[in-house]
Length: 120
Image 1 (spheres, rainbow, N blue to C red):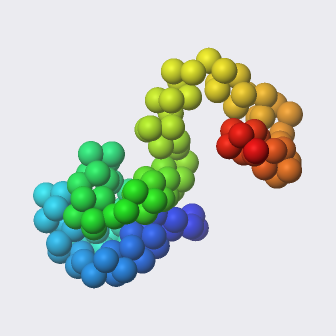
Image 2: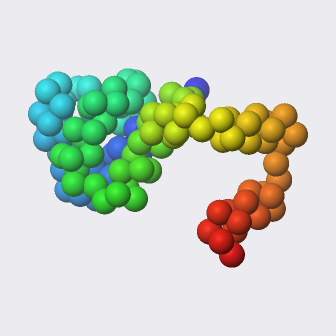
């Protein structure tokens, strides 16, 4: 059985922000059973436009928002739309990703790249 990456996070963040399943369902114009199903892993994460409505309803911080979007994409085995748009618009990023995929990259190399990007 596939791990319920998004559903577990949705439930955790919903409880942290003291929201009910009904409140979230209302925010996206859906039935409470959809939210319940997502949390249990029976339903896939919502469409991108509904994710944004959930972000607003949950009053997520920017960090929580990005985590929420990433978990939804990870659950669906896709790339978040904002990252995909950036990667597709930048030829050097596409080349970098392909090279990383082709040759594999150890954790140390990712850490080195992070330092370079931060200017350290």
